[in-house]
Image 1: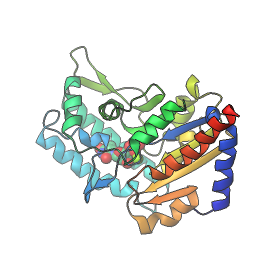
Image 2: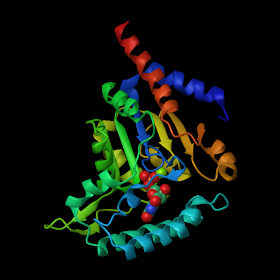
Image 3: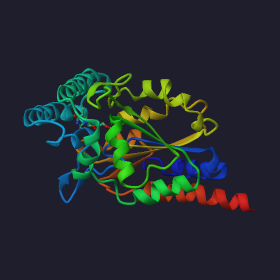
Length: 284
Ligand code: TMP
Ligand code: MG
């Protein structure tokens, strides 16, 4: 934390306002899902699709090459978001074209998720269940693949009624074969546009000016830009990779930075603090 006192004051103000004034906005890949497990990378929603049920070897190879080219640019501490933006559009566009060529079948997605090594962060159940119990809406704002993301949280038993997802959704033809991606492309550095055009319209989030924002990319910081008249926004950044190179940037950008922390312990503690007191106030 760069400004511990600001963090404490923000949490106190959010607790006074209570759970009924709160919303949580979170990124998905490498924020709600783990970055690594036992020293191996955990797949992102795009990489869960790397399964012979869905794509061939040639496509796997091309997607890996693209990842090796563009991921280092995505996390490069020496380039600005503006400089990275055209590369991200290129990456996502190329990958989505490859996926469409593979004629991916909708009815195979659940099996691919089951067979993947995807994992949510430790403590995910407390996080999702707690928000549901406190009736706090959770907006998952992801540049990943929405259909895959939904399947991951469904299979983990936490796709509750308070969860809303904004992401890249697949468009299947009448036979259930992928033919396109729906709507405006979301990549890591254009989340602001999605926030203003899509998140702002979600009625379930209206009247909730306090925001807990969770992300692993500096681009995630714009996910709350659609909130009208925000009162208190607390941002938590998971710094998973290139830690030494990016620590200062992250410390200057997020209120709280979690370094190589594969758990939801800190967000859970903050939420427990904000929402439990809310309940006591109601009782009193
Ligand atoms: P997020 O917004 O849910 O974090 O999803 C975006 C992440 O997905 C971003 O960090 C880059 C990653 N990604 C892949 O791992 N493979 C891909 O093919 C693409 C296009 C993105
Ligand atoms: Mg992410």
